[in-house]
Image 1 (tube, rainbow, N blue to C red):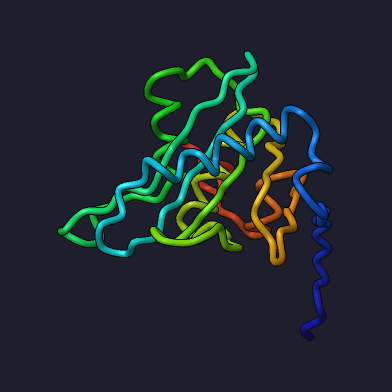
Image 2 (image 1 turned 30 degrees about the horizontal axis):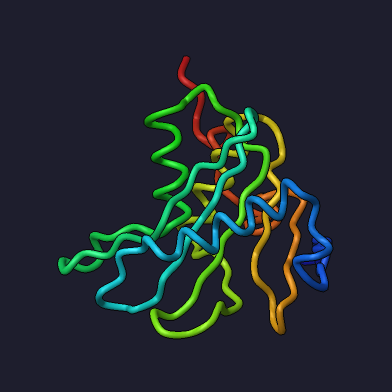
Length: 164
């Protein structure tokens, strides 16, 4: 017989940027600034991601579109893959995502399913939660304590068969 499974995900709704810690503010502002470097000539939707690293530096990524759709890549994955390719020893201490139309202000957004899966994998790789900031409505900011909250039934390396 079936029975319900109830999931609880707690998300802090931060009223404004003024309520962010200095590290969160730096990461948040870097994600917003990264949108200026998005290559989005088709969607005209600019997305930026910032990763706060264990040495205090910030690594950025942006969405990169391509005429041979869907050959482009989201900002979250460009940041994560770029970091792994250039600084694999770094640990991610925080992450922020920001988005806006080419002409206009910042808007609420959340990561797509493919990005959520990749984000959860990176958290699994470093065996440590990665806090996430996402833009909410009316200037609020959603603060997740772990990327895994975006994908509660994510697929991890632990789900793969073990070689014998």
